[in-house]
Amino acid sequence: MKFEEAEEYRKPIEDKLRKRPKEIHEENEGKEASTSYTSASKSQTQKGPYRYILSLSGGGIRGVLEAYALSHIEKTLAAKILDYFTDPDAPAPTVRLGECFDLIVGTSTGGIISLAMRVLDPSTNRPLYDMETILEIYKDNGNKIFSATNVLKKKIRQALYHIYNPKAFESVLTDYFKEATLKDVMSPVLITAYDANKNKPYFLKSPEAKDDSSKNFYLKDVARATSAATTYFPPANIKSMDGTKYCFVDGGQASVNDPTFEAYKYAKDSLYKKSHFHIIFLGTGIVSQRKSLASAAQWGGLLMGAPAVINMLLASSGEAAEDNVRSMICERNNDTFTRLNFEIDHQALDEMDNATPENLDKLLNYAAKTIEEEKDGSLKIILDRLEEYYAQREYYVFHKLVKEVRNQLQNGNQKVNLSNAYLQKLAMPYVCERAIWEISHALSTLPLSMLTYLDLSGNKLIAKDRSLIYLKNLHSLTYLLLNDTDLTIDGLERLKEANLSLDILQARNNPALEQFIIGDNKVANMSTFFVFFDWSDEIWKSISRRAIAKAIKY
View: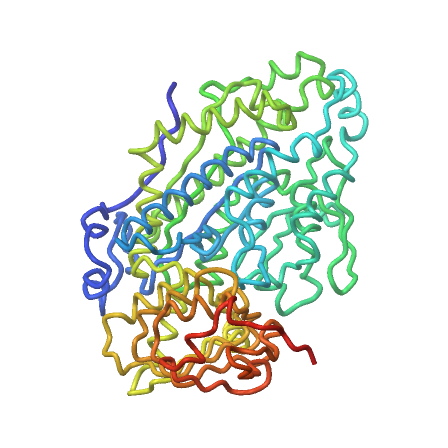
């Protein structure tokens, strides 16, 4: 089986990726980004960093193809990061592919995936879902959204009104997006829809939603709007956060089933005017030989030919978008475009709503086959691009936190504030197990006197796993704040394993550490006061489950 080749303009980056991150940084210092494709255009080289754009097309249940490929990419990147660091005790890197892109744009099913990649987890200040979880949306809920029914009945309903009641679909969207709104996503998304009242395309943009409540919507409503495919679902009648009413239908019917052109234009003209772009596009399936419109029409017009007609219109809009993107790239130096699509059969292409287990398995097999076929082609190019993203960040998933720590330690400063309240103001991820390991790893080569004071207050994730053990490389640390972290006795035992030389441990507002009796009736109240420890004395050595006689409640 032949698969569509990716359109790619690039300079090989393999040699660069083999180098250590420090070497890459030194090479790039003060230089313009390297050119991956040089056109014949006379336009001047754009200055600024590379930005990553992900574009996802529509296609109903065939979105499982995109989700499968993205899940494979995410897992592969996590494995590369884990292999890069040779510490066998390092916690697994919690890669979120949604963090790798400066702009994600999607239409219909691609719009749902785009939003799911960006929805914020308030407990981590990172994207809530990994790609495997997003893939499960299709596996677990496809049959709920596209409930099976008699084929002839479906055709009649499709011709007269719409096939499906949207309640089940809306329930699934509510389960995944809850009450999150468009302005809540941490990084830009653009979702396409068609305004049925004004008869024109409408682009829902998260940066605009942050400043204008008339452009801010619940994510579940945005997902419903972009995927309200005519003849499948009724229009989405929704309200913005200021109460403005809208009637939307599927963005694919606005000639933007492939939203790459709109994404590229928005990025270069509005969001990142002085940047280069790596554009990655994923489709939802193609066939080697397309049916003719006449062939579809002879089966009874709209009644029997609607799926084929819709798919031909969507395919045509995708081809036009790709031509426009290619034309724009030719006018600018240095930008790149990589396309990955999946060859499927005519039946799978036409049945956008076939969510039976048999069809899902077939689509997943098509996706797996494409992944194998393209492992040295377009898939490798995509992985190389994204590995370059991490190489520029020293392969740290929490590079923002590492960079923040380094910045705070400049000019002889020895104090670092990574409290939850501080990180929230900066829209940074909260500290967790992997983050502590990466920070400790990054600082392990610095002078021991660099860090003496560390505030981790409010980071509740660090009390739930082995996080505190990974402080062991911070040998110069003498003052540690763990206020309001839900710290427990188990957490103290793990902190003890770090074998630090602390003078002061501050652990206020941790209910599990209310007054308790240690050893020979010595009372430590770690919920209210500073705790001063000589970590070599008998009191600290005695802190263990066996040493606690009883807990005293207020």
